[in-house]
Amino acid sequence: MLVRISEIEVYAQYLDEYLQYARTVGVTSVCEEPGVICIYPMQLKRDSCQIRILEIYASDEAYKHHIKTGHFQKYKTETLHMVKSLDLVDMDALAPATMLQIFKKMHK
Image 1: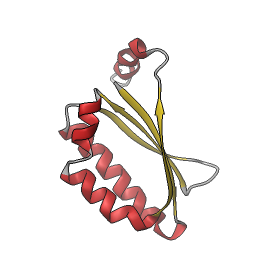
Image 2: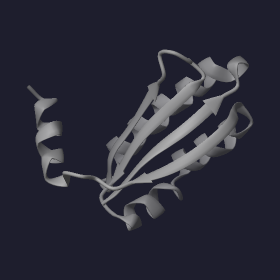
Image 3: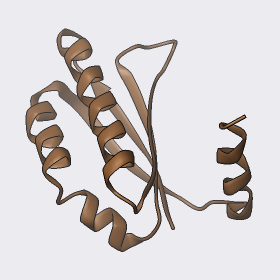
């Protein structure tokens, strides 16, 4: 499993447009790619230009497949000028066995 938090700062003049791209690529990726467990974009309340995306992939191979898809490539190329900074922070899941329980709760 690969878990990552993408820390993104977006230029204010592109914020609304960027948010639409982030929503779209997340939904498309989760719906169309079996190896994408979660792509969950969030916006900091204290600074709306700060975006965090929780990314969870079934494997490194699933991630490598994801970044080659047409929808991801479109997102990357069409938002490149909107992004002021990007930091991809790889994480170690401390309790990966509970992940299934977390997502099951969403269906209740």
